[in-house]
Image (cartoon, rainbow, N blue to C red; front, side):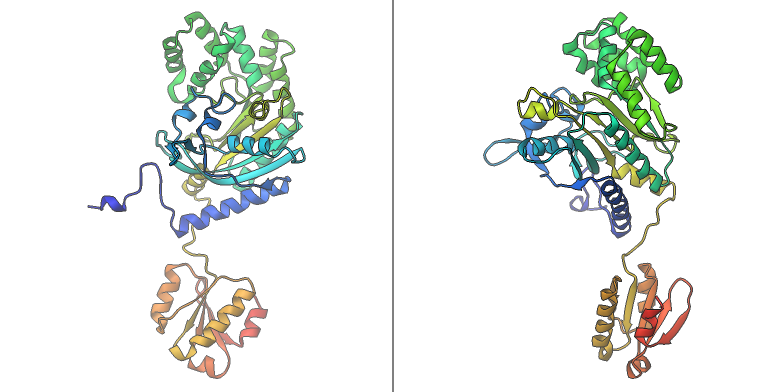
Length: 430
């Protein structure tokens, strides 16, 4: 039986070279895409003050995300948390650096932590890859972020749908259905569980919280409405003419350039207290393969102003890409090649007498930008087995004849082809 000392904690996992190399490749794609839209990198601490996350401008003390926060104390008995996401730390960063020129666009990638239920695609430590833009109140930026998201999943060859809704519209709908403003965040947190517990489950929770059944039934009848974007938007506009939230949804869809993958979803809630405008979540088009969201985000125009005690809103919007669910989806669809190592070349000296020359050859190859290892088995068969076990594509053999004649033999491990020539001549052909 495996020793308990060798077991990981629940909800976390190790990544060996194959998985880590593949994950790093995904990160490079995300980084390149973010930077192509003008987003700059920042980094913030893993540990944050508890008060920041629990504040009414943050996750909200009643939210599931706050309940799932890993809490700790330092030696001074101060309450701390492990970050559950990057939005709150980013808002703190912006509030604490008023000299930053706006608009300011940033990205951040790294581990976040949630003490929540474990299932496929959901872990207690996982990577998020976020972009945010501050200082742009117009919905053009909402559309741009949706453009960026489509670019990301196009590069990953993943067909997706983007569900979009708006908190202003949702709050107005709750008003229309008779829910008092001071209780609406509790209703939104329940609505956010629709995919998990269904309409009956949401109704039961709302009844338990003391809401009137007639109000609940009216709300759920609206959330159950179906149809294409144009039909649904027109239907809600009849009920709430000139609604600001509906206008923002239509504008974001327009500025996203390609509307085909965008779906207006009145039931989309995103159960965090800080959202103020458009919200969105991204799913695989075929949800039988993977049903959890791959990315999500939205507007939070009041968070930063709340933290700095300003009466003027600081417009902000962002989206977070979940690296683990994207990685797991790509692996399950065989859309990602798992490499066992980063090596391009393995240099094999056939005797200790040739090691120094082998090291010189390896160093020259590294100068050309290749990843190179030098092997010290001094046995060809064992060296070839090693190269195969780590998916090394080319092996350079340095034996007695090669050493005397200042040559090398290079073997292509994929084709089996082998040739001997001067080192400089072989490199010129690459």
